[in-house]
Every structure is written in structure tokens, then in C-alpha cells.
Image 1: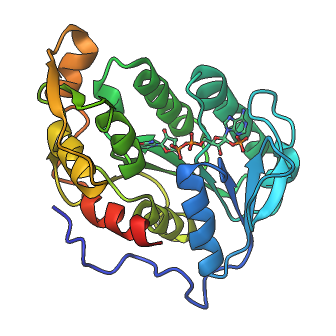
Image 2: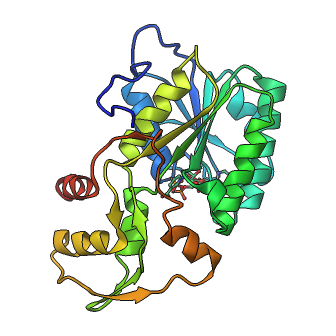
Length: 275
Ligand SMILES: NC(=O)c1ccc[n+]([C@@H]2O[C@H](COP(=O)([O-])OP(=O)(O)OC[C@H]3O[C@@H](n4cnc5c(N)ncnc54)[C@H](OP(=O)(O)O)[C@@H]3O)[C@@H](O)[C@H]2O)c1
């Protein structure tokens, strides 16, 4: 396991780091907002690609749409890197076709810019349709013949809170044997910015995961405890079908080579409560 306390290859905000802007697609989303904050805290100009002209962000707004390619030419001009966080549950049209449009715009207008593709740990091992799309997106980036790095993360704290905190009154619903190594988007954002600004060792795949492995039940109990609710009585859903079986056997958990770090789920929850 990588030492999570070791210094990153490149500390954000060092004076020699280029000050050309970085484009954050999906800069209005859960991860993208944290990436924008990290860039601005590091004195790196940030651009956000969004479909909404009135987007609430401190970054420079570039209105565009990955489904059509609108706005991409302008957004990629003169950036040193693109941190690609945009995604859609509809998958293919944004995450694969839209990514191809982004790669084409970069090839034509800014071929040297570093593309940082955000992906998911275990995407190659899960039959979940969204994970198939993420694996396909990695293939698109890998074949794009351009400077790129793929950064896979485990499930975000926000996501596990949403799916493990599901309860109907006193009854919670949990998948038997489901475990997570949930991670802190603020920490993932720091790593993404470090990777994006790295000028010497572009390429390859990085895996990021939170500091601990928790069962879905642990998360449900912690969430109930932290929010002052009674511990839910869990109904266990058996592992039926390929998707649930893959998740139940830990295909979403990080391997030995993953970098572990960031706040634990409980710490993240506690910090958010006092923010
Ligand atoms: N959630 C997790 O637990 C998790 C775990 C590991 C990795 N990841 C990966 O992390 C990345 C970010 O996920 P997230 O949860 O932060 O996403 P999110 O909160 O759902 O945000 C999605 C973003 O995509 C943008 N977007 C959607 N459709 C678009 C389009 N047609 N054109 C341009 N932008 C579009 C949205 O921008 P506007 O609405 O402003 O246009 C929004 O900012 C994804 O690659 C995801 O696969 C997520």
C-alpha cells in the first residue's frame, strides 16, 4: 500500500507550476466543485464547462454540452490540462460519445493539454451498465494518442451516504456483504490537481481510495448515529444476479496498489455538520 502521508509528486501552488488555466468539465458537480476549489486555492485559473450559463461557481464559466460538442472548442483553448469530471447516468452519450468529442476538440485545438480522466475503481470487473460505460471511456482515452492520466476513485462519501442511508421509518435496506472504501471528494480533488499539473510523468492509471473499508451496514449505522436517528433494523437483500454478486464479492474495493487517504466517512460527516 502507498504511504498516504508521503508528499505528492508535485505540491499544489508551487511557484513554478504553470499558470495557464485548467478546464474542469462537470465543474458544477459533486467532485468538480471540489476540484475548482482546489485549483483556485492553488492560484491556478479554473474554467468550468457546464450546460448552465447561470452556474454558481467562482470559476470562469464556459457554456457547452458534451452531447452536441457545443462550446468545446472555446473551452479547451489555451488550457494546460482538462480534469474531466462530467458524467451522466444516461452514460453513453455523455461519458463515451461526449468524451470522444472532447478528445477531438483537444486534438484539433490544444493537442498538448493533459487530459485527466476520472474513472471508478473496479469498473472493468462489474457488469453494472454505468461501470461498463466507464470502462469504455477509459478505452477511448487510452486510444486517443494524447497526454492523459486515468484516475480511478472508489465511491464518494456523498454517494455511500445516499445509498446506504436508505430507510423507511425504522427499517433500513442493505445488500448482504456489500462493502465500500468510501473516499473524500476534497482529497480526491487535491490528488487530481496534483496529477493534472504534473508535467514530467504524464500517463498511466492511478487508483485512489478512502482510508477504511466499511460494510453497508456499518455506514447505515454510522449515518443513523451521526444524524441522531435510531439504528435502523436492516433488511438484507441477497446477492442475486451478476451485478449484485460482483458488488457483493468486493469488485468495487481498491487493490494493494491504490493510494489511500482523505477523511474517514465519520470524520467527513462530522466536519460537514459543523461547516
Ligand atoms: N459518485 C461517486 O461515488 C463516484 C466514485 C468514483 C468516481 N466517480 C466519477 O467521478 C466523476 C464525477 O462524478 P460526480 O458524482 O461528481 O458527478 P455529478 O455530481 O453527477 O456531476 C455531473 C456533472 O456533469 C455535468 N454534465 C452532465 N451532462 C453534461 C453534458 N451533456 N455536457 C456537459 N456537462 C455535463 C454536470 O454539469 P451541468 O449540469 O452544470 O451541465 C455536472 O457538473 C464521474 O466521472 C464519476 O464517474 C464518481
